Length: 174
Image (cartoon, rainbow, N blue to C red; front, side, top):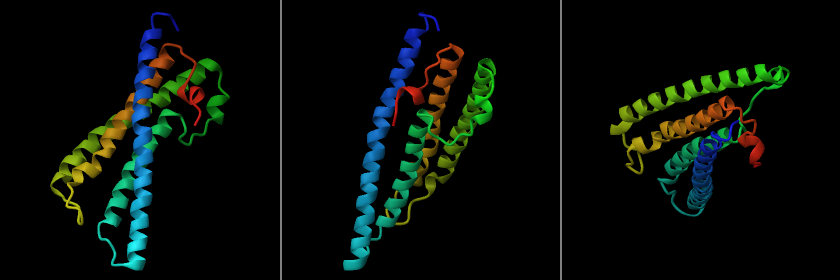
């Protein structure tokens, strides 16, 4: 890595940390809200008449939390991976394999952005049963999170091509 590429990598990492700083509290708040909604659902069913919207809110929160937490896991390199074959390769071949994997992931995420956006548009007329909320808001999580993960993959590709050996998974422990 040359000193001329250092400012670029610093900027990219700063943007990643900024995204992380936004997503982490949103996931935490979503989890807290999910616990609250499910508790309300249980208490209302046992003691009173069931509150109708709690199941729907819990489902939507779970979908959003899953995708957003998945982006955090992706950024930290925490998704399940079988690496014994790649780890056995010489350094140069390991870098090529990692680059190939990142390019495949990036292509998949771009496809997911396009398909997710189209699906979001197709379902835009549909309203949720209890809340009468446009399903566009529920399905929007797919292209949004795919775009964030694509950004993370792009940053990893740039780091790999510029020869920066440090990765986010090594830099930032959970």
